[in-house]
Length: 258
Image 1 (cartoon, rainbow, N blue to C red):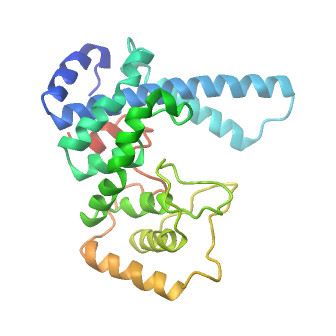
Image 2: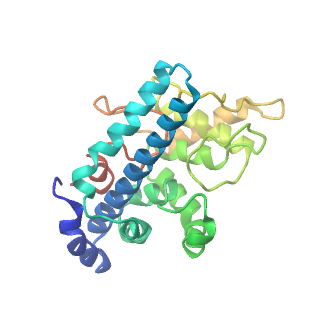
C-alpha cells in the first residue's frame, strides 16, 4: 500500500474495468485522497495569506486547523506524485464500479461521499444524476446490513430544511424532521459514549411537532431489527461524521479491505 499510485494506476484501472471491486475501490479512494490533499494544500496557503494580510493574532484553534491541513497534504506527497487533476477527476468512475460490484460498505462510502464536484454541478451532471438514482437505496441497504455508520449518514440526508446550515456531509438532501431525529437517536443508541462533533452551528433540536416518544420507539425498533448483535469495537476510533472522509493512510484499506 506504500508505492506511488502513478506506478500501479494502470494495473488497478484495468482490474477495475474487469469488475474487480477491491481494485476499483483502492484506486477511487487513493485518487480521492490525492484530490483532498491538493485541496488542503491550496486552502491552507490561502488562509495563511489572508491571516498575514489581516495582521490579526492567530488563535490556537486556527493553528491546529492549519497544522491538520498541512499534515493531510504532506501525508499524501509520495502516494500522489505523478497524479494530475485529470486523473483525480476519474475517481468517481472507480468509486461507482466499487459500489456496483463490491460490498455494502463500498456502497455506503459512495452514497456518503461521492467523488463529485460539489460546486460546479454541471461539470459532473451525468454522474450526479447517476448518484441520485441509487444513493438512498445504497444507504438503506447499509442500514439493513447493520453498518454502524449508516444512521449518521441517513440523519444527514433527512436533516430538516429549517436547520441553520446543512451540517451533514452527504450531498443527498431529503428534509424530513421526524426521520432525522429517528436516525440521530439510533446513532446515539449505537455509539453512547461518542463525543459530540465540534461545530459553531448547533445541531437541530426537535420542535413541538416532533413526538419524541415515537422517535425513541422507532429508533429502538430499528436497533433491535438491524443491530441487535452490534457491539461497539473498543479498538475503533469512535468519532462523529460519515465514512469515506479520508484523513489517514489506512483509509483505503479500511473501506476497501486488505
